[in-house]
Length: 189
Figure (spheres, rainbow, N blue to C red):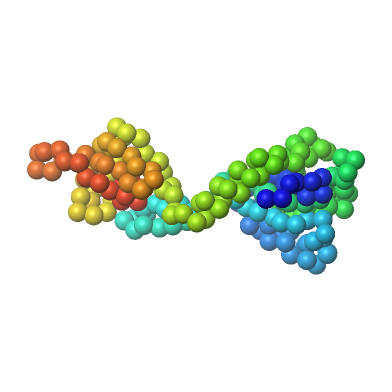
């Protein structure tokens, strides 16, 4: 990633919760129509794919890292550190925008390390498998939602996050047996 300069920095923009996509789409549309591409470069909603069981079916959804926030790459501060009014008001006057993160009239750009970390997380979660929506703990009681042990309760003995699997101890015919299951095959007990 190229080094960030005063003309190319990422800012966190607070928006109405649940309106992130609408605000992003509005900003992107207005950037084109108002020819603001020279000041506002990219608008992101950091997300990840998550999987869960709903009514016995495995579903994948998209979950926002930071509900109520957008990340915007833009030219907001000039070389002297003063606000660039044109880009400041353009974003501030977008319906659904509450403001920039930081003091009221002094937005703080994200540090380069924060940007690299966030982009790395987004790429990793985009390329990999969907992450389970819920995380489990050893000793937790769970209910098997899929497979031959469906509707049985068991206790989590081991967690393998790299493979997305759990070893759950279930009782079969009065005996306890360990069963390897995928995250999506169990629900919280």
